[in-house]
Image (cartoon, rainbow, N blue to C red; front, top):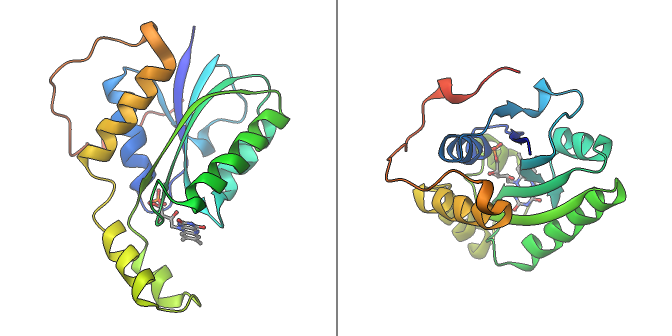
Length: 179
Ligand SMILES: Cc1cc2nc3c(=O)[nH]c(=O)nc-3n(C[C@H](O)[C@H](O)[C@H](O)COP(=O)(O)O)c2cc1C
């Protein structure tokens, strides 16, 4: 069984979680732009949420993917237990299943919104939205990464390497490997 972590990240949030998972589970790590096709049986796909679904680069990768087993995770401004996250999960599952992929699990956590994007945003600055953006600004944190690891371990089962006590947060940039 060959597994890999593939991620798409604009400002680094999704990359942080992806790199953590790759390190903890001893899996190869790829940016979505490095892989034109897929030679892995099982994939852990990470995206930043864009308009309630996977970002364009990951969406395009998912649309081309056929028959793989997929665990996906996303970072987003919204809370992971929100209706927004549930709809995002549903859209992603449909996208993958349309290509004959099997979804074996998923995970969401919050991720800091790029302040420049916030400045330019046409969304009304309601107190609720401002509070959400403040809340998201400290994510993903080590707890998010640990919860993501837990969810992936549960989905992949006994093929995962045993857990250990290594502290690997914050992560080094060098943990991203070229294909
Ligand atoms: C253009 C754009 C669209 C976004 N759309 C959503 C969205 O629909 N829902 C949401 O919760 N967050 C949304 N976000 C927030 C990002 O998904 C979030 O900040 C994410 O953690 C960024 O990940 P990255 O650092 O890996 O790029 C959006 C951000 C940008 C820049």
